[in-house]
Image (cartoon, rainbow, N blue to C red; front, side, top):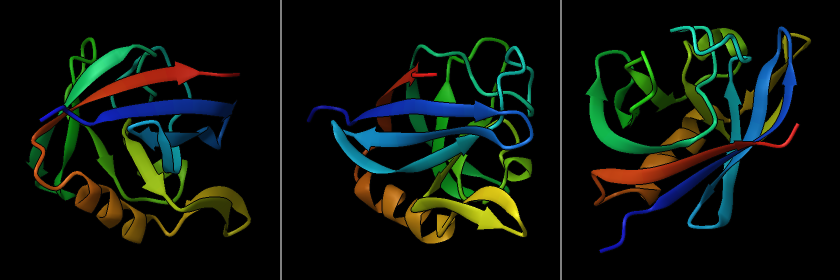
Length: 136
């Protein structure tokens, strides 16, 4: 069975808002994403460098069952998880249904349900490929 191919396409980076993008699964747009801005790969506050990675299914103490992006230089525990604003990212990738506003600030919305759909879509897989690219 071929591993799923995730493609994180970054579309916009704004200080204080973070990095907005879309996540494709096997070439099909699946959801929108939110990551922190590029802070030179600093743990917990930066997006990850644009390159190729593997993801492995893990159980996070805080987020439960999820996928960890492994092989990020100098970092660990870079996860996919739910959230709404850049403060929620913790250096990870948030999955959500659409872009919007929350308490007057740009955010991603319907994240909890979208994250569940993400995990459902990857049922039966313990690993996947991730390609990460920027278009800004």
